[in-house]
Length: 369
Image (cartoon, one colour):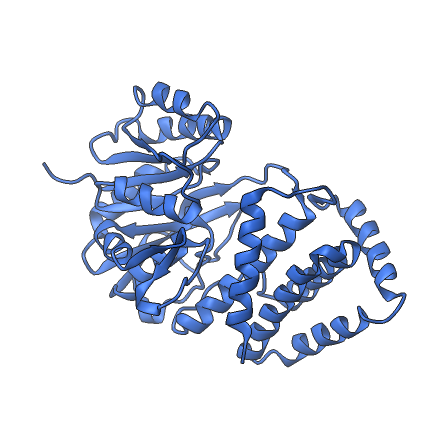
């Protein structure tokens, strides 16, 4: 029997309600495509109603599911869901994602027409606040030379990544589990920790001759209004900046969108906000300092002297007695006016604490001379 064309691979953990909504949306998308599309879900040992949700939906959609005996962490669950797939191509998707109407059929059809051994990776656009994340000068699926890609893909977002299964499994075969984390043998390091989806995509792209680009359909990024703690906010900023730096160091040939550091306004604005959070919460200062070191390294590599100068001046000003309280006051006014989605609340979840400890250790190694 020939392989199916497309596997939608969803890692999940304790998101039963969101998963229910996602599957309801996908039911409409895969109707009539059961012979060419499958949905693969790896449950990372959820303690909520996830298994009940999956039992209900396996009767309604072409579902392949498995449950880990313990929570393996995000990265290892990406490996698990990848191994579940039996289709030619894998489209990674979050458990709270939606897709534009007809996206699954369009991608499956385009892969049947254009997919080949030479095309190990496909970049699928994403819709955020009714605007496409990646601006394209053309319409319709195209296969492009991977060495002359005219766009900068945002590969930190899982829902934009589609890879050829054989290439993905080859990339995974060169990973070892060390202390619960993914040790990438070709690089003798834990490259792109917390971004296993990005690692798999770039490795698939690295060995490809062409890359597919689907500009007119894709995942809808849902801004659900959820809020995070100051600690989680700074951690997320750190690992996103670290992700950008690691790509520059290990994959200098790949031009990432770098959406968090792609303009002066974002670089300076995010640093001001993060530095003000740390000023308000001195216990979070080590996370901010790690973030500052990573961003400074990125600015150095890119030759962005103006931005580096502004960040250096800001770092110096923060040390002046009395200035920190002014920065905090200004930040709190800005946060209130803009309704920024993070709060000064306790957040000592063991997984977050462990992740922060590792991020600080690895950042020190990454930014050392």
